[in-house]
Amino acid sequence: MELWYTEKQTPTHGITSKISQTLHREQSEFQDIAVIDTDQFGRMLVLDGMVMTTIQDEFVYHEMISHIALNTHPNPENVLVIGGGDGGAIREIVKNPKVKKATLVEIDGRVIDVSKEYLPEIAEALMGNAKVEVKVEDGIKHINEVANMYDVILVDSTEPIGPAVGLFALDFYKAIAKALKPDGIMVAQTESPFFNADLISRVFKDINSIFPITKLYLANIPTYPSGLWSFTLGSKQYDPELADETNFPQLETKYYSPDIHKSVFKLPRFVRNLVK
Ligand code: SAM
Image (cartoon, rainbow, N blue to C red; front, top):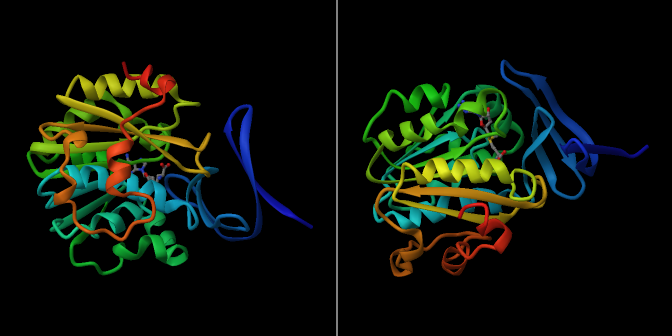
């Protein structure tokens, strides 16, 4: 008998993937956590029925949420990830030799534990890397307790439901600006231009009301809703489109590159119209 995992990405559309087995399933304090073995994408982390990351396509998202900001900032020593319990963003951040400390603030410790056990290729930097500090707490609480502390902050959250709703609010972005140093940069994953156009427009307007430089960029992530994903960058001083690639460190990456860095800000018209 064939087994298929289906994610309804909207009430009327979804993806389905043939699976060989469910490796883990539990209800944590915050969400349903599952790890399944899919034929097409390998191991897949699913939270509350939504695909978070897969072995085969995670490199796109984790490289693109991290290296654009890290290479735009001349000295990204102190970096914060809010969410990101699978560890993929942290793994990318510590590839950059300029980073001295990477802090993960993830509300659900069980996501970290399950990722370490079943997705070590993604969670590797959460296991004993001297540059990494892991805090299990609400990112909203942490961001309101710090000021003038981080060079780069990445918001690697689940969809804007449940504990992540507050991670898409104007007050949260204002608190991020306060937590950043005077030349800091933030990046938030901001969902799909096909399915979440209104959210993208509202979030861009909010971040643009706080940061002098605000840019949207895209990447193709096959297992995310619609396959086209957006990131919104807010910068207090440095323009990512003006970053000098001769200052970029040599990085082992499979999607991000200096050419990609230069090209991602050229947006399709229907996306450009969301952020006018
Ligand atoms: N790349 C995925 C995506 O784009 O959907 C997200 C990866 S990561 C698994 C998302 C994490 O955000 C989850 O582990 C979830 O527990 C965490 N999260 C949700 N709300 C949070 C909050 N308020 N503070 C900290 N972490 C939160």
